[in-house]
Image 1 (cartoon, rainbow, N blue to C red):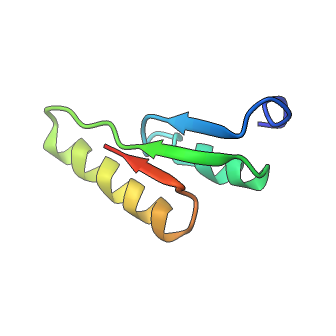
Image 2 (cartoon, rainbow, N blue to C red; image 1 turned 45 degrees about the vertical axis):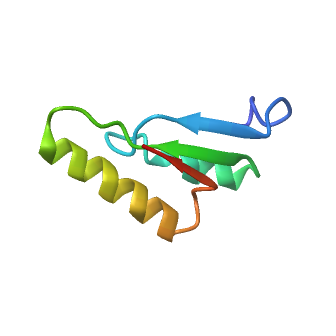
Length: 68
C-alpha cells in the first residue's frame, strides 16, 4: 500500500477471506478508500464466510463501497 499510495485514491478487493480481509484495513491506514467485494460461488459455506467478512469489515468502518 505504501508503494501505491501516491498513485491511487481507491483500491478494489474481490474477497473477504483467506487474508484478503486485511486489504481494506491496510488501505485505510494509508488513507486509500476501498471498494470491498465478497466473492460468491456454488459453495454455500464459503459464501456465508465471504458475506459475514464483508459485513464485519463494513461495521468496523473499512468499507467505503461494498460489492457482491
